[in-house]
Image (cartoon, rainbow, N blue to C red; front, side):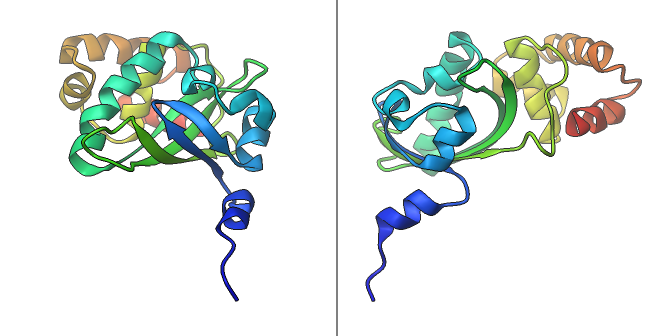
Length: 180
């Protein structure tokens, strides 16, 4: 019995997207449900509509490109935005079909992490990026290098996050970010 790959795409337990030049050319029903939008609304649109801001879309795209170019795949946890404006933590994994042109075509999976990690505090785009990397276990120097900012600037953002989450230590902050 031949495998129906279209059925596998549609029935996958995670959101799936096929992309071309950072536009969604196809997606499954799970992705539509996760973002609260129909396939007709999403297909043909830029991934930009799923990001909290245009700046984050641009920054993450620039950050992902050399990694996709070098490895052919990329994954991270980030805050995304549903059609109703609600922010939520999402695990994003993808593969470039051509590493030499990493955004030209790709296959992406997105998993809603909101049941495990809620977004309770209002964060800026840069705070979201720092928080995501703190959850990866990176140091301030490593985060600074990844984001192209100084480690002292990262420490300022980390201090803001600690105030917003009422955390007394870096470990407490990570615990509260995980807990939401």
